Image (cartoon, rainbow, N blue to C red; front, side, top):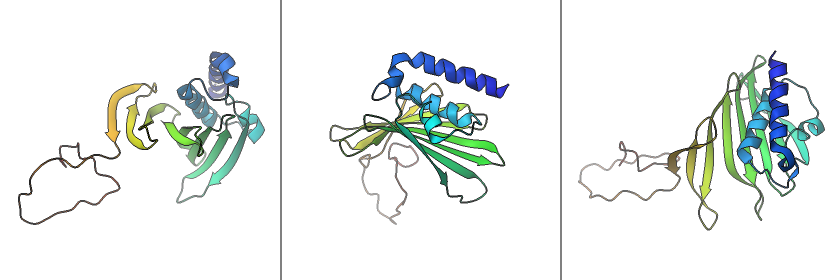
Length: 190
């Protein structure tokens, strides 16, 4: 039953993309990521050429194992697009069951593809959430826009680089918080 539903969903997605399926870059990157997630959910043992034929506009596909760092094992697919962009699909499984699927669309740029859109599906292959990177005029990533399970904006953003808040030093012992990133907009930190 799951294979039939998967095949119908895949056929509907390809039909819905129509002529855009053969454009240089996806007309709708979010729809392309949904399709990639559906491919990851299928249990078909396709060759790279067969996988590439399923992703709109893909020229080629490459499959490689993700080195295990514990019990889950993974597979990474890279789909090359004609304009220089790419779609990445990572699948993590344990005991033959899918734990997590990650799909990413990297848009073409002069220096090579840069991440634009990501989607996450969990066990059961349900799309859980998405993220869109926002860039400034000079091409630097400045924020992550949070997307819902429909890949639509939630109107929430997380700044990647925020200015420290204004304030005064109350004196006393200086405490530093070291992290990979500090969101100065959180009330617990501000």
